[in-house]
Length: 190
Image (cartoon, rainbow, N blue to C red; front, side):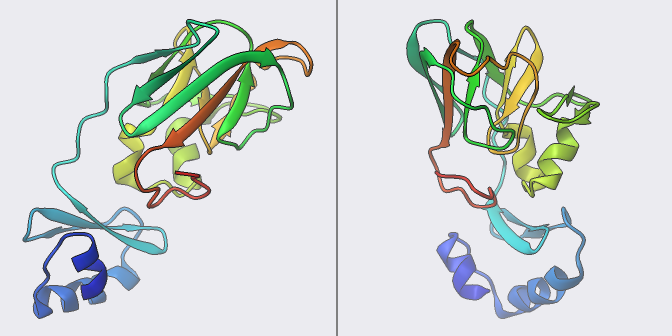
């Protein structure tokens, strides 16, 4: 634990390390303990994550798909797009296809829902992020790709059934990559 803390840029006293070692095994996911050195320890399912505070607010809205190809930086994420012929759209992937047209990248909104590809009914984005084991502290800054205000895609978490092109049709290919360490992001290629 002390070596992991040092690697994350924290110095823990023996007493603080013992406290964290006792806290982590029984703590519910999302439980937090403040660290004396300007950080926080958070349990995220079966992991203990150490991070510096304060967490940055989510980045402002970014636009994608307003040209045949391009990129949009949103926080520590890069969204790339290009026009092409649609391939198969998967529900959980860091690459997807959408019908032509622009959209936005933004943070999740409270109470927001989407209809997952291949499922009936709508699911809360907060629940989808939790089920994907995204740590609670990362959820407010996780990218939501939208069109006309409706969520289309949580990269690596869930694709909605909205704006899905037919295979072989003219479409826009979207790819999302996290530019910093993918700590706590299952399947994250970043």
